[in-house]
Length: 282
Image (cartoon, rainbow, N blue to C red; front, top):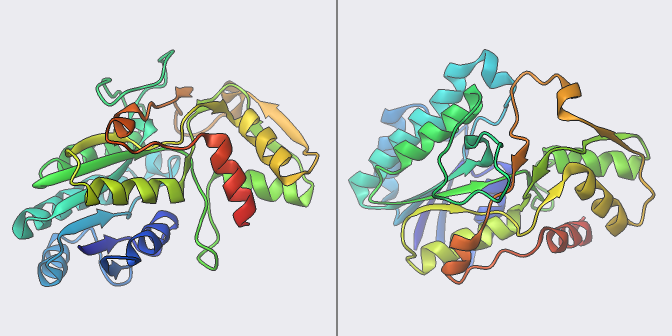
Protein backbone atom coordinates (compact mmCIF):
# COMPACT_ATOMS: atom_id res chain seq x y z
CA UNK A 1 0.00 0.00 0.00
CA UNK A 2 1.25 3.48 -0.87
CA UNK A 3 0.71 5.83 2.06
CA UNK A 4 0.85 9.62 1.99
CA UNK A 5 1.56 10.63 5.58
CA UNK A 6 0.72 14.26 6.37
CA UNK A 7 2.13 15.76 9.56
CA UNK A 8 4.88 13.14 9.66
CA UNK A 9 7.14 14.90 12.14
CA UNK A 10 4.59 15.22 14.95
CA UNK A 11 4.12 12.93 17.95
CA UNK A 12 1.55 10.72 16.26
CA UNK A 13 2.94 11.07 12.75
CA UNK A 14 6.37 9.74 13.68
CA UNK A 15 4.84 6.66 15.27
CA UNK A 16 2.50 6.10 12.30
CA UNK A 17 5.52 6.25 9.98
CA UNK A 18 7.36 3.62 12.00
CA UNK A 19 4.28 1.38 12.09
CA UNK A 20 3.75 1.45 8.31
CA UNK A 21 7.35 1.30 7.12
CA UNK A 22 7.26 -2.48 7.39
CA UNK A 23 5.29 -3.79 4.42
CA UNK A 24 4.16 -0.47 2.94
CA UNK A 25 5.56 2.47 0.99
CA UNK A 26 5.37 5.61 3.12
CA UNK A 27 5.73 9.07 1.63
CA UNK A 28 6.22 11.55 4.46
CA UNK A 29 5.11 15.17 4.32
CA UNK A 30 6.22 17.49 7.12
CA UNK A 31 4.92 21.00 7.76
CA UNK A 32 7.87 22.50 5.87
CA UNK A 33 7.15 20.25 2.87
CA UNK A 34 3.39 20.78 2.68
CA UNK A 35 1.16 23.62 3.83
CA UNK A 36 -2.04 21.71 4.55
CA UNK A 37 -4.04 24.95 4.60
CA UNK A 38 -3.32 25.47 0.89
CA UNK A 39 -5.79 23.51 -1.22
CA UNK A 40 -3.64 24.07 -4.29
CA UNK A 41 -0.52 22.69 -2.60
CA UNK A 42 -2.40 19.70 -1.22
CA UNK A 43 -3.98 18.95 -4.59
CA UNK A 44 -0.61 19.08 -6.35
CA UNK A 45 1.40 17.10 -3.82
CA UNK A 46 -1.18 14.35 -3.31
CA UNK A 47 -1.88 14.20 -7.03
CA UNK A 48 1.79 13.54 -7.77
CA UNK A 49 2.11 10.99 -4.94
CA UNK A 50 -0.90 8.96 -6.14
CA UNK A 51 -1.39 7.22 -2.77
CA UNK A 52 -3.74 4.38 -1.92
CA UNK A 53 -4.34 6.04 1.45
CA UNK A 54 -3.76 9.43 3.03
CA UNK A 55 -3.12 9.53 6.78
CA UNK A 56 -3.55 13.00 8.26
CA UNK A 57 -1.67 13.65 11.50
CA UNK A 58 -1.54 17.44 11.09
CA UNK A 59 -3.53 19.30 13.73
CA UNK A 60 -3.88 22.54 15.66
CA UNK A 61 -3.85 21.26 19.24
CA UNK A 62 -3.68 24.42 21.34
CA UNK A 63 -7.04 24.09 23.06
CA UNK A 64 -6.84 27.39 24.92
CA UNK A 65 -5.11 29.22 22.09
CA UNK A 66 -7.96 28.32 19.75
CA UNK A 67 -10.27 30.55 21.79
CA UNK A 68 -8.22 33.56 20.73
CA UNK A 69 -7.26 32.23 17.30
CA UNK A 70 -10.31 30.31 16.05
CA UNK A 71 -9.50 30.93 12.37
CA UNK A 72 -6.12 29.23 12.77
CA UNK A 73 -7.79 26.23 14.40
CA UNK A 74 -10.44 26.06 11.66
CA UNK A 75 -7.89 26.33 8.87
CA UNK A 76 -5.86 23.34 10.11
CA UNK A 77 -8.47 21.18 11.82
CA UNK A 78 -11.36 21.67 9.38
CA UNK A 79 -10.63 23.32 6.04
CA UNK A 80 -7.32 21.48 5.56
CA UNK A 81 -9.22 18.21 6.03
CA UNK A 82 -11.66 19.33 3.33
CA UNK A 83 -8.70 19.79 0.98
CA UNK A 84 -7.31 16.36 1.83
CA UNK A 85 -10.71 14.73 1.32
CA UNK A 86 -10.96 16.35 -2.11
CA UNK A 87 -7.46 15.15 -2.95
CA UNK A 88 -8.47 11.66 -1.83
CA UNK A 89 -11.47 11.84 -4.15
CA UNK A 90 -9.25 12.79 -7.08
CA UNK A 91 -7.00 9.73 -6.67
CA UNK A 92 -9.63 7.39 -5.16
CA UNK A 93 -7.66 7.03 -1.94
CA UNK A 94 -8.79 6.22 1.59
CA UNK A 95 -8.42 9.00 4.15
CA UNK A 96 -7.52 8.50 7.81
CA UNK A 97 -8.11 11.51 10.02
CA UNK A 98 -7.72 11.83 13.80
CA UNK A 99 -10.27 13.63 15.94
CA UNK A 100 -10.82 14.02 19.67
CA UNK A 101 -13.03 13.36 22.69
CA UNK A 102 -13.51 17.13 22.90
CA UNK A 103 -16.33 16.85 20.35
CA UNK A 104 -18.46 15.74 23.33
CA UNK A 105 -19.63 18.00 26.15
CA UNK A 106 -18.50 15.62 28.91
CA UNK A 107 -21.88 15.44 30.62
CA UNK A 108 -22.40 11.70 30.09
CA UNK A 109 -22.34 9.09 32.84
CA UNK A 110 -21.25 6.15 30.68
CA UNK A 111 -18.64 5.76 27.94
CA UNK A 112 -19.39 7.61 24.72
CA UNK A 113 -19.98 5.53 21.60
CA UNK A 114 -19.65 6.57 17.98
CA UNK A 115 -23.42 7.04 17.70
CA UNK A 116 -23.63 9.56 20.57
CA UNK A 117 -24.40 13.12 19.53
CA UNK A 118 -21.40 15.49 19.64
CA UNK A 119 -21.75 18.80 21.44
CA UNK A 120 -18.44 20.72 21.28
CA UNK A 121 -17.94 23.42 23.92
CA UNK A 122 -15.12 25.52 22.48
CA UNK A 123 -13.39 26.73 19.32
CA UNK A 124 -10.90 23.86 19.24
CA UNK A 125 -13.64 21.27 19.77
CA UNK A 126 -15.84 22.81 17.10
CA UNK A 127 -12.97 22.88 14.59
CA UNK A 128 -12.30 19.18 15.18
CA UNK A 129 -15.95 18.27 14.69
CA UNK A 130 -16.01 20.20 11.41
CA UNK A 131 -12.94 18.24 10.37
CA UNK A 132 -14.86 15.01 10.94
CA UNK A 133 -17.64 16.25 8.66
CA UNK A 134 -15.22 17.23 5.90
CA UNK A 135 -13.30 13.95 6.14
CA UNK A 136 -16.49 12.09 5.26
CA UNK A 137 -16.24 13.48 1.71
CA UNK A 138 -13.37 11.08 0.96
CA UNK A 139 -14.23 7.87 -0.95
CA UNK A 140 -13.41 5.85 2.17
CA UNK A 141 -12.90 7.85 5.35
CA UNK A 142 -11.75 6.61 8.74
CA UNK A 143 -12.12 9.14 11.55
CA UNK A 144 -10.32 7.92 14.66
CA UNK A 145 -11.12 9.81 17.85
CA UNK A 146 -8.12 9.67 20.16
CA UNK A 147 -7.69 11.14 23.62
CA UNK A 148 -4.82 12.35 25.81
CA UNK A 149 -2.14 10.91 23.51
CA UNK A 150 1.11 9.79 25.11
CA UNK A 151 4.30 8.10 23.95
CA UNK A 152 6.76 8.89 21.18
CA UNK A 153 9.42 7.39 18.93
CA UNK A 154 12.83 7.32 20.61
CA UNK A 155 15.00 10.09 19.23
CA UNK A 156 12.05 12.05 17.84
CA UNK A 157 10.96 15.46 19.08
CA UNK A 158 10.28 15.55 22.84
CA UNK A 159 6.73 14.40 23.46
CA UNK A 160 4.20 17.00 24.49
CA UNK A 161 0.99 16.57 26.41
CA UNK A 162 -0.24 16.09 29.95
CA UNK A 163 1.21 12.60 30.47
CA UNK A 164 4.69 13.74 29.43
CA UNK A 165 4.44 16.71 31.79
CA UNK A 166 3.34 14.51 34.69
CA UNK A 167 6.14 12.05 33.94
CA UNK A 168 8.75 14.81 34.03
CA UNK A 169 7.42 16.14 37.34
CA UNK A 170 7.50 12.67 38.95
CA UNK A 171 11.01 11.94 37.66
CA UNK A 172 12.39 15.26 38.86
CA UNK A 173 10.64 15.13 42.23
CA UNK A 174 8.58 18.29 41.81
CA UNK A 175 4.88 18.66 42.50
CA UNK A 176 2.48 17.54 39.80
CA UNK A 177 -0.92 19.23 39.79
CA UNK A 178 -3.44 16.72 38.42
CA UNK A 179 -7.19 16.76 38.03
CA UNK A 180 -9.07 14.55 40.43
CA UNK A 181 -12.48 15.10 38.83
CA UNK A 182 -11.78 14.77 35.10
CA UNK A 183 -12.21 11.21 33.83
CA UNK A 184 -10.52 10.03 30.63
CA UNK A 185 -9.61 7.11 28.38
CA UNK A 186 -5.99 7.86 27.40
CA UNK A 187 -4.45 6.70 24.12
CA UNK A 188 -0.95 5.25 23.74
CA UNK A 189 0.28 6.40 20.33
CA UNK A 190 1.70 2.99 19.45
CA UNK A 191 -1.69 1.36 20.04
CA UNK A 192 -3.38 4.02 17.90
CA UNK A 193 -0.87 3.39 15.11
CA UNK A 194 -1.40 -0.38 15.26
CA UNK A 195 -5.18 0.07 15.12
CA UNK A 196 -4.84 2.42 12.14
CA UNK A 197 -2.77 -0.14 10.25
CA UNK A 198 -5.22 -2.94 10.96
CA UNK A 199 -8.22 -0.89 9.80
CA UNK A 200 -6.54 -0.11 6.48
CA UNK A 201 -5.05 -3.54 5.86
CA UNK A 202 -8.34 -5.26 6.57
CA UNK A 203 -10.34 -2.76 4.49
CA UNK A 204 -12.63 -2.41 7.49
CA UNK A 205 -15.89 -0.50 7.06
CA UNK A 206 -15.25 3.23 6.85
CA UNK A 207 -16.61 5.56 9.52
CA UNK A 208 -15.88 6.93 12.97
CA UNK A 209 -13.99 4.79 15.49
CA UNK A 210 -13.06 5.55 19.08
CA UNK A 211 -9.38 4.66 19.27
CA UNK A 212 -8.54 4.78 22.98
CA UNK A 213 -7.06 2.33 25.44
CA UNK A 214 -9.71 0.36 27.28
CA UNK A 215 -10.86 1.34 30.75
CA UNK A 216 -10.94 4.78 32.32
CA UNK A 217 -9.27 6.80 35.03
CA UNK A 218 -9.03 10.26 36.48
CA UNK A 219 -5.83 12.18 35.85
CA UNK A 220 -4.96 11.61 39.50
CA UNK A 221 -5.32 7.85 39.07
CA UNK A 222 -3.23 7.92 35.92
CA UNK A 223 -0.47 9.87 37.67
CA UNK A 224 -0.54 7.40 40.56
CA UNK A 225 -0.20 4.43 38.20
CA UNK A 226 2.62 6.14 36.33
CA UNK A 227 4.50 6.74 39.59
CA UNK A 228 3.91 3.14 40.68
CA UNK A 229 5.30 1.80 37.41
CA UNK A 230 8.32 4.10 37.77
CA UNK A 231 8.84 3.03 41.37
CA UNK A 232 8.89 6.63 42.57
CA UNK A 233 6.96 8.19 45.45
CA UNK A 234 5.27 11.14 43.70
CA UNK A 235 4.30 14.59 44.91
CA UNK A 236 0.78 14.74 43.50
CA UNK A 237 -1.44 17.73 44.15
CA UNK A 238 -5.11 17.00 43.37
CA UNK A 239 -6.94 19.91 41.77
CA UNK A 240 -10.51 20.35 40.60
CA UNK A 241 -11.50 21.54 37.16
CA UNK A 242 -13.54 24.41 38.60
CA UNK A 243 -10.42 25.80 40.28
CA UNK A 244 -8.16 25.61 37.23
CA UNK A 245 -9.65 28.65 35.44
CA UNK A 246 -8.70 27.37 31.99
CA UNK A 247 -9.41 29.53 28.94
CA UNK A 248 -11.40 26.80 27.14
CA UNK A 249 -13.95 24.47 28.68
CA UNK A 250 -12.89 20.82 28.99
CA UNK A 251 -15.28 17.85 29.05
CA UNK A 252 -15.40 16.52 32.62
CA UNK A 253 -16.31 12.93 31.71
CA UNK A 254 -14.70 12.00 28.41
CA UNK A 255 -14.51 8.22 28.55
CA UNK A 256 -14.94 6.65 25.12
CA UNK A 257 -15.81 3.05 24.29
CA UNK A 258 -13.58 1.21 21.81
CA UNK A 259 -16.16 -1.57 21.35
CA UNK A 260 -16.65 -0.71 17.67
CA UNK A 261 -12.95 -1.33 17.04
CA UNK A 262 -13.21 -4.59 18.96
CA UNK A 263 -16.06 -5.54 16.63
CA UNK A 264 -13.51 -5.41 13.80
CA UNK A 265 -11.17 -7.70 15.74
CA UNK A 266 -9.00 -4.81 16.97
CA UNK A 267 -8.73 -4.92 20.74
CA UNK A 268 -7.22 -1.92 22.47
CA UNK A 269 -5.12 -2.87 25.53
CA UNK A 270 -6.02 -1.56 28.97
CA UNK A 271 -4.63 1.86 29.83
CA UNK A 272 -2.62 0.36 32.71
CA UNK A 273 -0.91 -1.99 30.26
CA UNK A 274 -0.18 0.95 27.99
CA UNK A 275 1.38 2.89 30.88
CA UNK A 276 3.57 -0.11 31.72
CA UNK A 277 4.86 -0.29 28.12
CA UNK A 278 5.36 3.47 28.08
CA UNK A 279 7.52 3.28 31.20
CA UNK A 280 9.55 0.39 29.80
CA UNK A 281 10.13 2.34 26.58
CA UNK A 282 11.56 5.36 28.37
